[in-house]
Length: 206
Image (tube, rainbow, N blue to C red; front, top):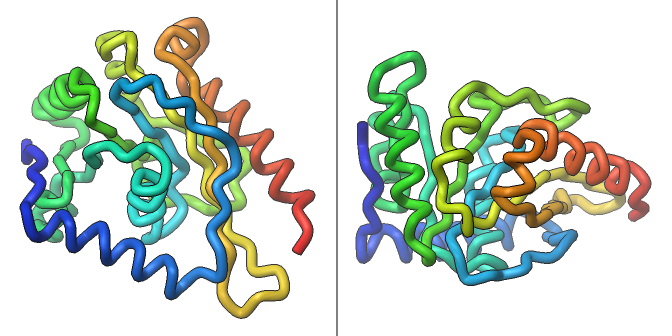
């Protein structure tokens, strides 16, 4: 597998590029919910709906979590877009022995308090209009072995134009603990959160 790195030039430039692109391409960004910072590592789980998803989570991290950014990416895509390795990207190869290495590496990253790890449990881009988010296998192997103090941040991203020329981005967030997930499942907890967030968004007015 390919492990993440944070290049002293590429990583800061990536963060600046993120802010520039979002400020230029979106009319507004609204973060709905609160992040209760316990000073521990953060496992961030979000819906995967567009090319923009990674940039949105970088933005959220810069504004709210302020952790060292890491994200899981398909190995063939990371080899193609090699520069993401130097912004915190690391690889996973589905249906291979190295998948276990990627899961173990994620658990290792979550041992450090200043780290944030971002994953797309859907595994592929799907429509933003989905009412149920189906998780692939793999994420459930991380939770039982992760540091019990790790915070889990659920994120749901939605875009609406309303009467604006540029889109408006809405980032819904919710904190849960590893203990909460173990009592249920991450997919169940995420979908409860996602359904509530979608209902709020549907009733939002311009």
